[in-house]
Image (cartoon, rainbow, N blue to C red; front, side):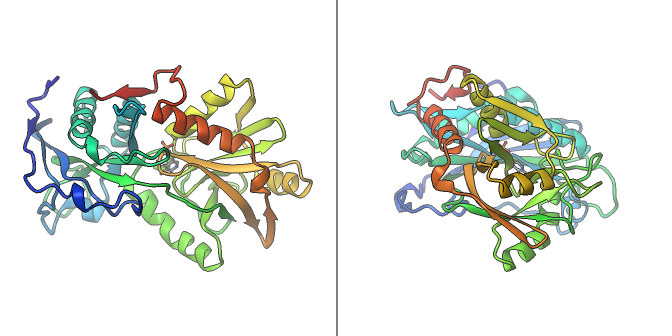
Length: 353
Ligand SMILES: Cc1ncc(COP(=O)(O)O)c(C=O)c1O
């Protein structure tokens, strides 16, 4: 299935044999090939898969200065029968195009995106770790390429996808700081886009939180500093006995694909799941009363990450992660679907054959 004139140029120097799949730090090991496409004169072309390696960028590249840069993060896993599988790739295609729209960048055609991830994963199938919970992480991104200083929409772009074999993102439960001095995103801003600048703005507050002994910031809304948004690179869920609550996406929160999947799994299990505004006061009070039984984050990289404590205005509430039931169940189902151990009743996976 080659609809775009995709050219495939294979490496003659595979690095596969040098990788220790039993010990892969997140995001530091890169597979043999990458996908590249270029945009000029109003259309995408020169689509190719080539050996992974650096490319030259002009010092005046407009993306360095004005930040037209967006990305995605998605995973390929192996079915227990050995078939590579992609998890909900069409949603990642849709989301990168939503991000592109917000940053006045061109959309990348869905057929080209699907072909790119499919052909790349087919070529890199031996790079997919076999252990459940590990995966080949795919990083699609788009950057402006005009060589020009001046705030304006670039006319040229590069679209790239590279791959990293990865193990679990967080290997310990998280301590979160609910921060009321910095914000991540305001309604009307770029918070719903996976824009590089959103992450740059989060670095200083996160660094300060880490100096206080926290792992991540739990962001509060920009207007009232009161309603919970999300955490680092994860959406957030709260369990109150039999009821699960996650902040409704209000325009400033990234619409997580794992979040969407977990909501569906909870519905499938007949559990009560509410998408609504949830304030930090509600969370801290319920935690104090013992009514808040679980807190966990969701994301492609982290899958489901347990939260062991939340700090807010000097108050620290801790959670008994050993008693968690909902978070481990959700993690098991997502990982099970990704490995074929659990039936994929919603057709979330695409087999790469
Ligand atoms: C800011 C932010 N929120 C949430 C998520 C979780 O989204 P997903 O489940 O699609 O990976 C991510 C990761 O992509 C993220 O970067």
